[in-house]
Image (tube, rainbow, N blue to C red; front, top):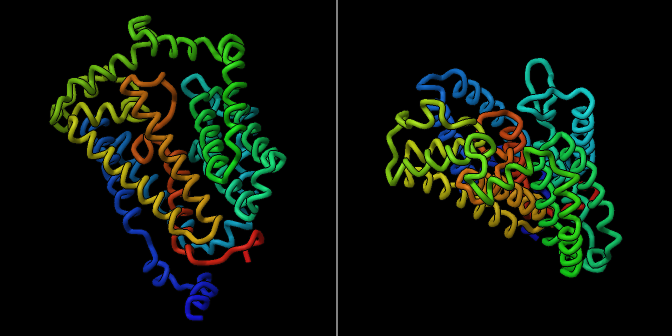
Length: 381
């Protein structure tokens, strides 16, 4: 009876009670990565707060506001608004197609005057939230029927195709992998994945010749043969390898990286920030960051496994996939293990859209953990 009372009153918890249920094991490594980001961006700015470190610090403060709102808002609110949040994110992606701001050769941003936002980053979390609500109250029979995956597939394909057209293939592929991962988690039949893989392989020639831009094909060719165009498509990855390799075990010292400080390393504050960290702090620094990421993944997995309601489980699992794909692709890319794609290093890379969307996702996972014992309905009651 006491147990049932605690569950039924979960939505009436005070802030102090919610803090007692808080996952500090997830919160602390997240904060450590954010602090590391400021330290590395200070170095990227040549030992100055401007133009990167100060701006990112302000965005991190904004991110914490988003995080705590997401964490401490009643979980019923997120259930009720899940589809509306997805619709809003999708609308922003559609707006980008018509009035988007172009930067670095791609039309990916909305200019709001005081800030540029990248809706493709936000749709990742919005899709996880929407799919979490969609699948959470289905039984095993419903989850075994292919017709119940048609709506989620459309929910993926619409933003996927719009993002590919921006062009932003890296983010689109991340969105696809997150969705496939959620399908697997909820229990989709394995034969469907096999059929999808076969269809994907058959479509590969069409995508190569008709779906990719010249620069995207050049990146893939450069990945296969790094010396193909060392001064063109291969310049970024070759400089990244030189910088990271030159760091050795202990690095060249903070703010003493020759490749990064002398601007040989492109995009050192965004996509290639891991390379800069490796050059200055060496293998030890890089390993420490990967260790923090691994702890975050383990804690997200633990939050998912200990959550007694399906909605919270799917939110945590979906965000865990999102976070893992972020850092796995970025680190693999800068080490030359994958073709170059525009995927930021989570919580580290300079920029606001990725950071704010991730902080929102972390807040949702904390919310799920706080309400892990609460029984929920599709209506949020």
